Amino acid sequence: MLRSRYDAVIVGGGHNGLVAAAYLARAGRRVLVLERLDHVGGLAVSARAFPGVDARLSRYSYLVSLLPSKVVKDLGLAVELRRRRYASYTPAGGTGLLVDNDDAGRTAASFERVTGGTADLRAWQRFYAMTAEVAAKVAPTLLEPLADRTAIRDLVGRDAWRELFERPIGEVVDERFADDTVRGVVLTDALIGTFADPCDESLLANRCLLYHVIGDGTGDWNVPVGGMGAVSGGLADLARAAGAEIATGAEAVAIDPSGEVVFRDAAGEHTVTGERVLANVPPAVLARLLGAEEPAPEGAQLKVNMVLSRLPRLKDPDVDPVAAFSGTFHINEGRDQLARAHAEAARGEIPSLPPAEVYCHSLTDPSILGPDLRAAGAQTMTLFGLHMPARLFREDPAGSRERALRATLASMDAVLAEPIEDCLLRAPDGSPCLEAKTPVDLENEAGLPGGHIFHRDLSWPFGEPGTWGVETGHERVLLCGAGARRGGGVSGIPGHNAAMAVLGGF
Image (cartoon, rainbow, N blue to C red; front, side, top):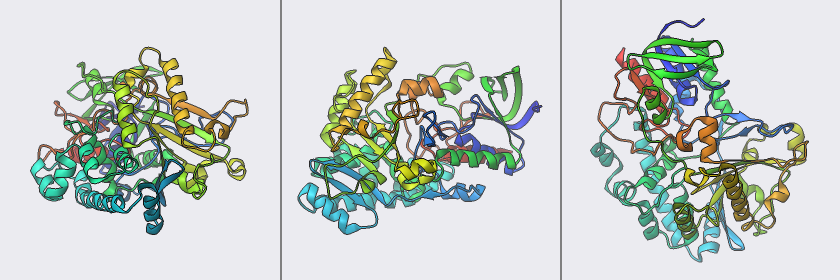
């Protein structure tokens, strides 16, 4: 039996809601988490996506960068985040650009092969030295009350502020780098999950880039051992151990600004009241629960999950596929290719050569594969396709998904030495181990308006001083999901900040 009153009712059992629940319960607060699905974790979950295939895929979100080590330490989260040796590999003609974190000489030689010189390597080193300095300075502020624009500007310094916060990142990249391939590699971090022109004055792409390079003060993208479900599962265990109640199959249907929450489960409709309500849902969903309306944002990605019987062969015989696919493998993401795909999608067309990137989690964390698959040399592969806005999938969701998938696989084949479909593992029923998710699929299956993985466009990490970036127009209602300021990605930051706002208010 649930109580009728709590110190905090958290609507949504994704990882941010679980972080908030753990902090509040550890502080002695009475906490209830309501999750509409039959499991917690939101999009940070692991699943066996293909019947009869013993592979636990991070089906939606798939890497960890923004989760602060402070949150891990504060809560005692027992999760191993494993570093990737190789940052990326980008095919370019018969060779490719390999960025090896542990071998500067190899990286330099790769740059010279692709670009014909050393100028872009030096520009690369200067640019990422700048972002590393910004990361070290800005990341700690993400777990503090907001600073204003001037304070962050003074913190990062004039040059970095101009390049990352004031000028369109597309213009900056075009000035700093000469090679189209190198430009594209830099710009992909400005476009993940974001449908934007990097030269647009809105600076939406700048905001996206910033969040991709500042994670935990290093910008490293790490692999959670056991899959994304290990992160959410560990957080849920910590919250429960601290005394939080977690109800699954419990869908919130209304929130009153007074703190009253109406939810529905298998037994019917119920009402609970919280001194505070923490909404771990997209802002558009929170508006609906409050009886208002907010325009839905637009997601812009194609997510493809695969299990391979073996890694595909590369056009470059000097690069081991294990190295190429251990980091981010870029597919037709040159500067001009990204611009062409954006223009086609803006016209309502599925890009003719979709830009995408893939990564094989099992090369870093073999534990997500069963012993028989490991012995046979199988690997998981996650593909993230850019410039696939929800508008492309509205009229004919199934048909347009299939067309986008076929175009994306063809794009991948163009940079490999063999078709990727020849490498797909077959499930016991003979079907290929491949699934595709569009923004419309995420909207329908995960309840994300517009299928936007960040819940809405990312915001700058500054604002009204003294606030936490989680406040809403209602004193008792806080936003603790990815749509909060400084949200987005698997970070736990909005969950932490909402909990701190609550604890400061009691």
